[in-house]
Length: 230
Image (tube, rainbow, N blue to C red; front, top):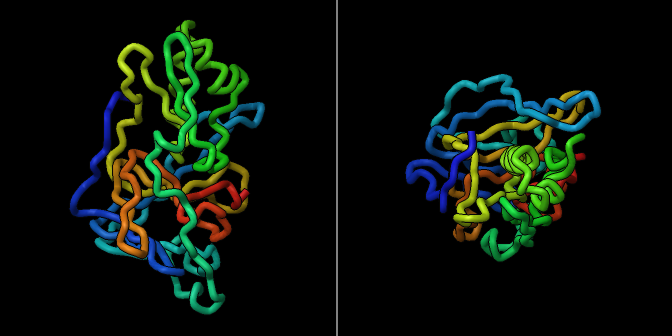
């Protein structure tokens, strides 16, 4: 599933624009699906399972205030409730935000501000940080890589210690509406495959293989998810 890549340039014919106090404007026919985080017997998420596939559209608007009656699409409710969608996220590149944790076989980069609360970083085998430190062990290294790759927000990125290359899931450009099995409310929009994201002021955020955008309207790190939906 995972492979090494240095950067993700995205596709020129697709993208997302964060409109001012309004929806995410999606262009280029990006596929839209539901994905459910399935837990183990102890309640730790261990895998993503695809659900409903939405009919293909060229352009569409996704709700950013969390109050639409036509989830996940915008129905204009943001104007009625006076939604404040002020973008507060850092414009710094990931590596300039991230902390570095070193192990014998892996290096883990961690940007806590990007955490969406997915929970894949914890399991009965251990958490990603400790497993990284124990990455001279084949099993620990394998689990740490999988946990980091399952992090939808891209908060965690594992790199090979010898080469320094990041290990990333092989995603095609698309959007997933996340949900945790058993939870009533949906999670963030999971943006995959190097989709360009542009602020309402015309400036672009760093293009990455995976990020999560706020779906509930409550994030303090807009437009990115900070786990407030939970």
